[in-house]
Length: 256
Image 1: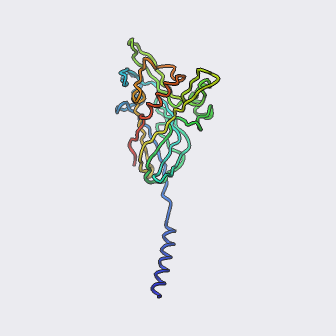
Image 2: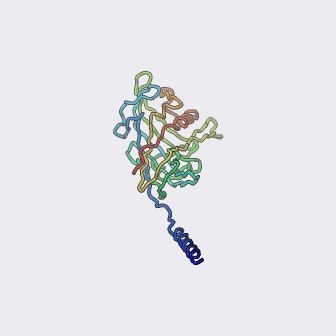
């Protein structure tokens, strides 16, 4: 009987000790870095202003400006739990700024079934003139097109069908039909980018790759001769940009 009591006492102490030893997983900063390529060939600001790329329509073009907005970086666990971070980042390849972004919350180390972010702003965040820093970057959308903010500005030149250099402005915003200025019709064109499974370790880095060529390619083959300017008020063009954007981003290297 004494042996049984002793075993029970030891079991209780062991259980209490085990409960006391349970600790939360350590947390760490996670930094997203944004890299850019044209069908696998690295693109940086040093490659701008040279007509050297061919899109899926065989238009020959250059890149002179590339800026885009990402928001709501979210970490997903396999059990359905999510950690949604606040803040946004205006990636500016032209000026070589904001090519990295560290969300304002630390993330528990471990395996995440998916890391996602929003391309642009969703409707909750796309509030006209709400962000001083974006206003100073001339990132706003005119009220005649519904206000709010750009999602992307991609600009350059291309060789048109009479062999002349012509400018293009591939600007992504929320799609709007403003044929009746008193009754604007909208369609959402922000979208969620799912990078897939990521193992977060201490001081983790996650590379986000953009294949710029995909903006002109899949599923809508983009003819710059037909669509090179006045694309912001072009409802159908904005919807096609949204569709093409689904294959633009992918997961790169995860460190350490």
